[in-house]
Amino acid sequence: MSEKIFNWTYTLFKNWGYSETVSAYANLFVNIILLVFCVFIIHYIFRKILIEIFGIIALRTKTEFDDLLVANKTAKYIAYLIPLLFVNFIVPVIMKKFVYWEGIFSKGIEIYIVILVLWIIRSILNAIKDHLKKLPDFSDKPIDSYVQVVMIILWVFGITSMILIIFNTSITNIFATFGAISAIVILIFKDTILGFVASIQVSVNDLVRIGDWVTFEKFGADGDVIEINLATVKVQNFDKTTTTIPTYSLISDSFKNWRGMQNSGGRRIKRSILIKVNSVRFLHTDELEGLKKIQLISSYLEHRQQDIEKYNLNNNIDKSLKINGRNMTNLGIFRKYINQYLATHPGINKDMSMMCRHLQPTEKGIPIEVYAFSNDKRWINYEYIMADIFDHIIASVPYFDLEIYELPSGKGIFTEE
Image (cartoon, rainbow, N blue to C red; front, side, top):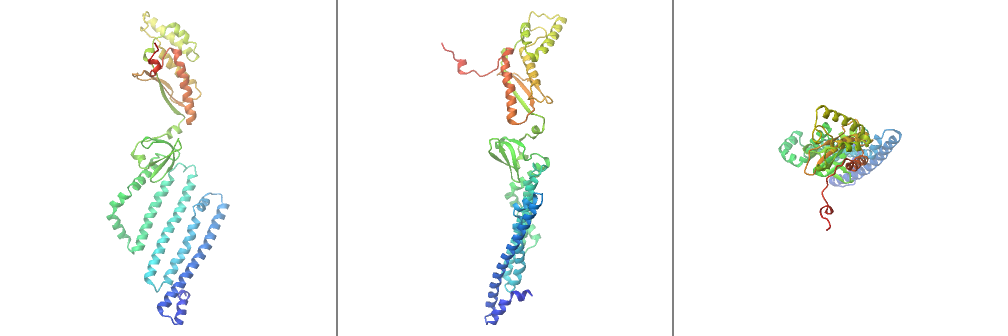
């Protein structure tokens, strides 16, 4: 039946007295024109039908997945595939008398079908990726990496299939060839292989998620992770610039992930001021009486002074020298004041570590460090809380007859005569 349909031109030209060769080429020419016309009609019809069907389904369903299929042009690629399958079926029939050209055209069409199938799968995977990114459970997962890994595997199979089609060879010969050139393949795709391995380890060990704040000093990155794919990790810095980091660097180099802080109850404050060593001294009784006016430590000084006097009296301490027995220092009372101040500050999380500690003295003085956690982890509010605390601490230093160390300026070194 098909031979009668596609050979009528050949019979017609033979009846007109043309040679067999001319009749065959004329028949082929007419059939190609008819095939092209049919392909355009089939493509137009199916493209219209598929796009309309996808559009109607997308409008009438509540899920967003079908909308993403439309956005990723899945229907368009399927509409290309249907006429191509028709051509692949018809070509052997209309080119029956041209075996050589039939083989070339058939191989070209089969290769195009393989590529088109990969495009369709890619559009579906992209729709799945976009859909999963909108779900809370997957919004911070490296979906791009997973899709890229699947596409690499599919492209390997696709390229292998195309090689089999072109050379009419077996899969055994292909694997033997790949084995011989495996060293070159590994060298060429080194970064891809490293990125693939790194993506798996990053995902399995949950090292980085999309939305994490990371600091990577080697690459100058300090900001939020906005994308994780097979080869790179994109970080949007706080100055709105973007830094691209090789994925395998996440497992080969050291970086800081602030997720633990963001998931905790507060953000750490760890900052110190330097107190001049020669301003530290024992306090006299009258000075203690003056410091009792400071409400945060008045009760502490009262009880502390009683305990010290009782100890010195019971042990017959000679208080003609201040160094004898137990005494209070202005620096010790200042540290107690800072602790009390932190305990009453509304910006400090009282359920986490909180202290004012005395660090090892240096050539620039004695570091007095505040170690606490703010109850607001947002950057701007955190900086405000920390600044508010240290504004108060710095302003409080003179009340304890202490001095803060700072390098002398020109005015402090040179005096007018």
